[in-house]
Length: 273
Image (tube, rainbow, N blue to C red; front, side):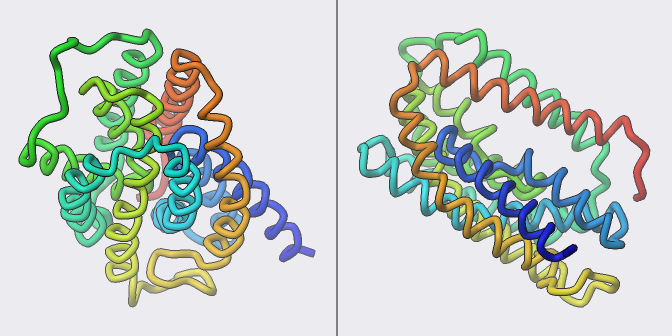
């Protein structure tokens, strides 16, 4: 009974996050992380370990949701592949630094506080539909490398697909919102691959891991969520195509506000170190 209930809960989580991945180019980490944390703590994992495993497992599911959603966006011609090529090297480097070293050792309170402030600021800019300077353009090779490094590093620390940074960055550079969302979905794949490798390596040999763990990755959650999320990601991508630009920006900003609120909650609520 407990196993069946867990599968149903994970399936619902996967269906929801898959749709969001297609709609907004996100991996759904802000939804997955709290729920997976609760599931793991209910099964005896310490809260600190549960949070780290939830972040790592959330990132692993992005490998699958990214593939599914980017195929749908690519069919509509919305992915800016030259931006993917420019940002990906920095993303891989930044993600490796975060997941191989900083993730396992860093205390999360100051990071979460500054991160919530940054996300809240980005969401406000997008919600108010701030127009970038008309002459502003995407930076050159070195600029994209640096931006990719920041996106990959932040993503690796919080288990997100990077859309919370990459979409505001691209719209700030006068990339159309539909192109920014689609390109962010494509960036989710190198972000996830780089960080998951780090999570596995840094988690191997840890004591008291739950059953069926691979480093920091919780395989039951990965399997069920990935299978379900790929079903709904194309539906989200189809919805994104039909939504007006301003409405899509406000939906995305609302999701960012939820993420910022969750991070603040984690800072203000005493937890195990």
